[in-house]
Image (tube, rainbow, N blue to C red; front, top):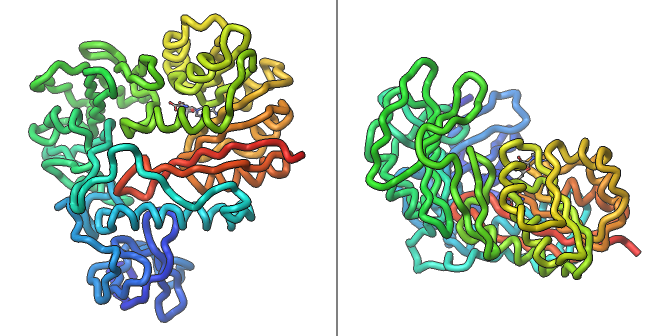
Length: 431
Ligand SMILES: C[S@@+](CC[C@H](N)C(=O)[O-])C[C@H]1O[C@@H](n2cnc3c(N)ncnc32)[C@H](O)[C@@H]1O
């Protein structure tokens, strides 16, 4: 079955960076490298004759969409780099497709129309990302390179461990490109994460060696800190330089250590803080929770706005990230950071009320148990920051069961050229 080709009419976009088509046998094909409305030759990449659905790549475009462009990146295309999904789509079409995916997920998983979700249906580009045709925003401040057996750095092919060697990633931020990771050999390494902080000159390289390999001497053109991931248990150690980078957002500096989470697009942190604060409208004296708080981005933004009479509790699972959050917010007397799983910390702290809640969970979402716990706090408003529209829609359905409905929803294209999209939903109690 793999390798078989079908001539198909391509239907709507689906979540995950592909479009839906059907073959003569009635099987659903998830086709990459195509656009809605095209007629293409789709070559199967995964699945068997008995599979309910197949994965495929468009290898020949018979009728092209007017939204199609020549991919600006020479490493994009069937079987090539898996980092981007929409190199072949005009930027406006990328955002439209992301909007269609959000609408479809909201409808299917939460039973919500865009109007019911308080959403105008648009996906807004990040400031500065509207570029002349053919130019690609260089937004990725954190790039995970994979290294092949010959020691060449590249990016992983789609759903594969194979490495596509690249000499430059077009969406990498200038601070990452300047490190020249692709320009040198990395014998013995399995992967390399390159980080260029926003608003500081901090640069960091995180090396993961193959079992038994020695670390190379990292001599790059500029000062960088180097960390090493231990292959045995995934723990991260400092090799030289600072064990963290300093990221600026919301007029504060955040220490982010040892591979801790930070938003990747340089405008993302500020864009999301603005959207969350405009939606929540914190008042002096409010009590607030920031769940899944990472290095404390929203915790600090809330603390600033609720003032000395208010209080903010941040909850974060990562030990190192929780320490970073405590360090970053040490000058706020009324901020506390609890380390642990949200679902375990909430009952442990015995908090029974909060005026405002922010939650920014990982891709899987928060889940029914956590949402039921949250709804019981009777917050005036809840801001849900979501990097996966499917998880968001599932969680909105749990919120509805628990008595909250979306008041507004906004969507931001913080991951241009890929299928990813960030949403901010503001919820309020159903009266
Ligand atoms: C999408 S990040 C958000 C971080 C932060 N809000 C920011 O914008 O920088 C999600 C965070 O949740 C943490 N996390 C994952 N599962 C968790 C859980 N069950 N309880 C608490 N934190 C968790 C991760 O370590 C990560 O820092």
